[in-house]
Amino acid sequence: MIADRGSCSFAKKVKNMEDAGVAVGIVVDNTDENINDIVMSDDGTGAGLRIPSLLVSKKDGQKLIDWLKKATDEELAQVMVLADFKMKAPDNRVEYDIWYSSSIDLALDFIQDFMKLDREFGKKVLMTPRFVFWECQDCDKDYML
Image (cartoon, rainbow, N blue to C red; front, side, top):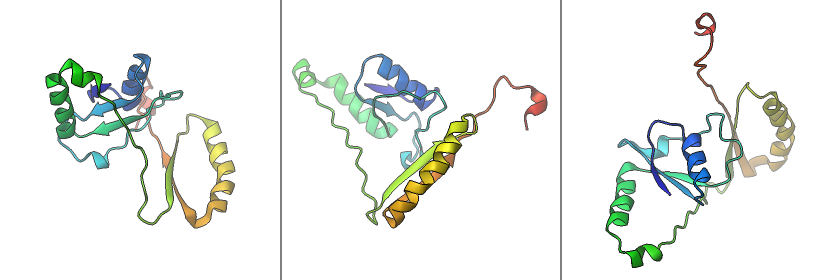
């Protein structure tokens, strides 16, 4: 499925695609920006997502949409989407991020336990911890900065 980025979170967008029964979600950016600088992060609602998803630039997404609009039924019947999520690091290391927040105490326990495994990997991997912040829409204004 191809969907416009819109204003909802990536997690919500992909969840809606998954609920619609698609196998891969393609999100088309809604502005002309460098998508290499965008992280399709979880807003805290993405637990349980089972489909892969990717973000394509507005320009590339428009090419896909334009082709789909002009394609014949025969061409559409032959379309197969192949999403390759392999990324090779230039120094041949496996690079991964671990995203966590203070909203789940288990995340800190996991990171502490996982640290032992990460150290065993040595220079073969590069782990980057990422801390997620959410704005509390319903919080008392006295507690907000």
